[in-house]
Amino acid sequence: QVQLVESGGGLVQTGGSLRLSCAASGRTFSRYHMGWFRQAPGKEREFVAAISWSGSRTYYADSVKGRFTISRDNAKITVYLQMSSLKSEDTAVYYCAADRKNRGSYYSYDYDYWGQGTQVTVSS
Image (cartoon, rainbow, N blue to C red):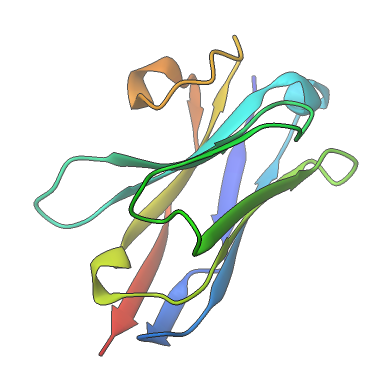
């Protein structure tokens, strides 16, 4: 079992930056592919970014490519999402998730463990 706790959300102005953290419990964290998803009010949950268990491969949604960076520190059992050049359309609850089978998936149903989410609000 893996427990995930996100932090770092908040209110930021358009063009600003935030860094989200996802702290995990469990020694198996370092073997899991990790992802970030987000859900805006009235919309479906969508893929944002993902990272392989080793950190050697990263994946991004087109909407955040070049602005967001995903990384992980397996020693600290934490995954990060550095967000820059934030736009109002980035406003959402951000969730981190873990995939036990390392599928490299963009789909939320392929992830086994989820955090409770952290709110990011970008104001113009």
